[in-house]
Image (tube, rainbow, N blue to C red; front, side, top):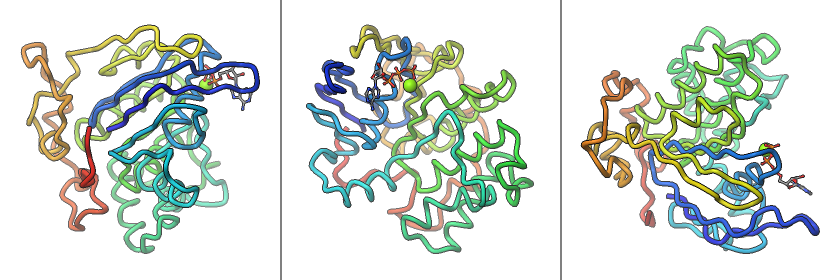
Length: 282
Ligand SMILES: Nc1ncnc2c1ncn2[C@@H]1O[C@H](COP(=O)(O)OP(=O)(O)OP(=O)(O)O)[C@@H](O)[C@H]1O
Ligand SMILES: [Mg+2]
């Protein structure tokens, strides 16, 4: 799904990333941890095409993004990558619903399509009642969940989150983390999450430990891996990562949940959450 090869980045004399190789499979929730200054945000920004590596390749769903023109890259990013930041970065002049709709409108979807999808997402997050609220009228936890909805509106291949719960209290933190796993379990959504939260990292399928611009260790949580074909999304995504060792799998509470309205999309690809582009290779 995402392949990083020999990613190197320097800022002046400072070598921030020293040759990172990383593969993210569809449907995985991967965390990136490490001390401040280790290069986590830099790596995430390069993965999300917001920044360019000095060397190395970034392949997302079979597309080598280093080969794309600026214009093609912006379009690709808008459609394939969702971002969640530490501070929600919602637009204060717009309502929650409008904020969620925004990336869809920018991507050229009709107002109606954007609105329907945004309403579905808000429903899924239990935030329908807050749709007409502006950011200043929302709690911190609500704002972050709105930011997650906004990240999902274009049905991206991957959501990249940089310390998404860093500004939340423990109850809102827990709720946001639960949401990530619900979205993975029910929509097959792939997440890469930079976090200082050990509790969250421990729940993820894989934790990449970064130090001084290098991957020093990777820990895997096999118990979180979904059994192959255990849900429609697993099959639809062709999730190869799905449980290499099924005997290690334990039942995941999310798997029994009824799929939300969002799943059976009346509209065909290219706007489907479970789409696999033809050039999908991972
Ligand atoms: N645009 C920039 N120009 C110069 N140096 C930068 C720039 N961005 C990051 N750095 C430096 O690169 C190093 C890695 O930064 P990065 O933001 O990736 O760290 P991080 O692991 O995300 O840290 P934190 O946990 O504090 O967010 C730091 O030493 C930082 O000062
Ligand atoms: Mg950072």
